[in-house]
Image (cartoon, rainbow, N blue to C red; front, top):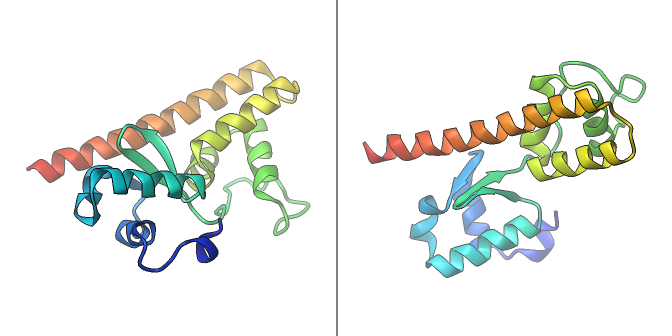
Length: 158
C-alpha cells in the first residue's frame, strides 16, 4: 500500500478514506456528497488498485485491514511474530476454523483468500473436503457482508 507516497491530502481518494474511517463496509451511496458519480468511481477504483478497498458487489466495497489480527489457534507457533500474511492464510486454509478464516478474509480480502485457495487446490496441498469447507466459509463471509450492507440500507431509509 503506497498510501503516503501516491495520495495527496486533498485528493478525493484521501477524503474517501477519511470519510470511511473505521467502517468495514463502504457504499457508493454514502460517498455522494464528496463528488460526482464518475469522480467517486475513479477514486474507488484507485483505492481498490492500491489495496485499501475490495469490491464485493455493485456499489459495495470492503475496507481491508492493515494487519492480520491474532488467531484463535496458533498455527504458526514456530514463528509467532514472524509469519507472513500469506503463510498465515495458507495455514488457516489448510486447517480452517470459521473465526480465523473470517478474520483473515476481513483483513486480507476475499479475493486474496480465493486466489490462495485455488493455488493450494492446484498444488494438491489440501484435500477436496477441506477445500469445500473453505469455500463455504468464504461464501458465508461474503454473504454476511452483503447482508450487513443491506441492513445499513434499511436502517438509513427509516
